[in-house]
Figure 1 (cartoon, rainbow, N blue to C red):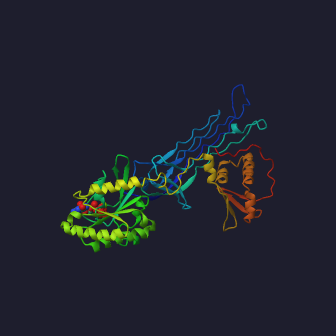
Figure 2: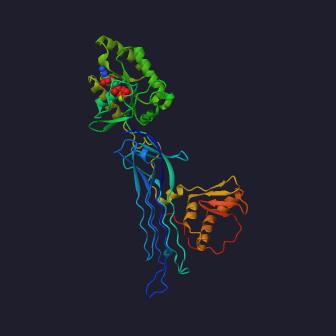
Figure 3: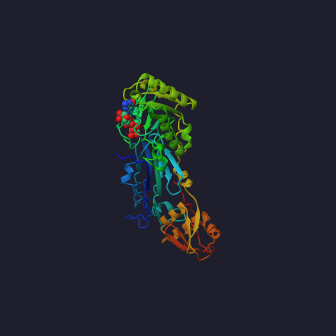
Amino acid sequence: MKFVDVINISVSGGRGGNGCMSFRREKFLPNGGPDGGNGGRGGDVVLEATANIQTLADFEHRRRFVSENGEHGSGNARNGKSGARLTLPVPCGTIVYDAVTGEGVADLVEPGDTYMASMGGRGGRGNRVFASSRRRAPRFSEKGEAGEERRLKLELKLIADIGLVGLPNAGKSSILAAVSGATPKIADYPFTTLSPNLGVLRTDVESIVLADIPGLIEGASDDRGLGLAFLRHIERTRLILHVLDVSSCDAGAIIGDFEVVRGEMERYDPGLGSRPCVVICNKIDQCGGEDELSRLEAEMSDYFGARRMEFVSVSALCGSNMPELVRRIVAFSAEHPRPKGEVRMFASLEVQDRASLVRSRLKVQIVSLPGGGFRVLHPQVERAAERYDLSQEENVARFTRLLRKHRVEELLSAAGAVSGASVSIGRVEFDFHPDEDYGSVISDDNERYD
Ligand SMILES: Nc1nc2c(ncn2[C@@H]2O[C@H](COP(=O)(O)OP(=O)(O)OP(=O)(O)O)[C@@H](O)[C@H]2O)c(=O)[nH]1
Ligand SMILES: [Mg+2]
């Protein structure tokens, strides 16, 4: 399957069902009370990390997701059913950004981590709810709200303990295969590996995850070869294994190879330069006789010793010295235990209750439009504009009260709106008349955040 690690999607919660306006009609009860039920809530869209998928490729074919609408309320006090939640599985290591603001909003690391991508709209309330001792026959109900519409960017940064880097054909995939149960494609030509492979080295105490990425070449930062894009998958590793092909036995050339890859990595992220690193001199079986190998190792020791880097000579093909490599990996992992939660780029979202989630997404903004009009941006007020059936007089009063509560009039005046200016909120447009007497305002507090 194609490896996809960045993708934009759009998500929308389901629409809430409409509340119903109805009065009880029974044979011997000509003036029954209000019995219109509430609409059901629209379903949410939730992202959930799962270990069963490794890439974002599923999103290539479908990028828009809408969850189920709530059912409308009906007479006889019947409430509509809520819409089902839509859960979208994503691979562990998926980072979620708001595509509009660019803000990082969640980092889904562990299987089961979830992010509320888009909330379903609230159901409208039926007229039954509005009955009170003073208002026995409310002749209004609410419409359901639209679900939250969001555009998200998903970016996968694999979660691995150890990353393998090196030039193409150095033997990275061969080493991954030799130390773990993975079976990556291995072949004698550059760019055999086109997308990251994960392998797991199981020890008595832990499972160490290794990531093998496509080879880097000089100029990768200018997008030569497969570019640097895959380096994002070693950003979260604790140890880098830098694989060198030493079959030429030419120390100068081998060190040149090392510096090319190192330079490209540092150009991508200077922080990678200080990440713990073990250099693997691979293909020693091709390195002539013992003397030649000892001479090469002495030169490597001088160079890497001066840089305080460990190196180990192996042959992935013949298996020579591989137990030593495994021993070092296991020892490193034991000395540098996986930091719990620290691999996250942002704090994971604590489970928030819906009310605070709604509030955290609220921001009032007045935008003055080129033609002289104004637009009020505020999720709750915009939703109310949509939800309140403004052909019902009492709803107009409720809506006005909501605008006052959010001081929309004051903000409009401050933004330069004068009486008669055209103001739009969502799909509703009206003329601005700040001093108008809106008449009696109904007294119950109809806004809630449930
Ligand atoms: N002689 C010898 N050949 C090796 C050794 N390790 C790997 N090879 C061979 O080198 C070639 C490249 O190996 P890969 O593991 O595919 O190399 P890679 O670094 O993953 O290459 P890319 O995915 O293209 O970047 C294959 O033909 C391997 O069989 C070794 O220790 N000795
Ligand atoms: Mg490979």
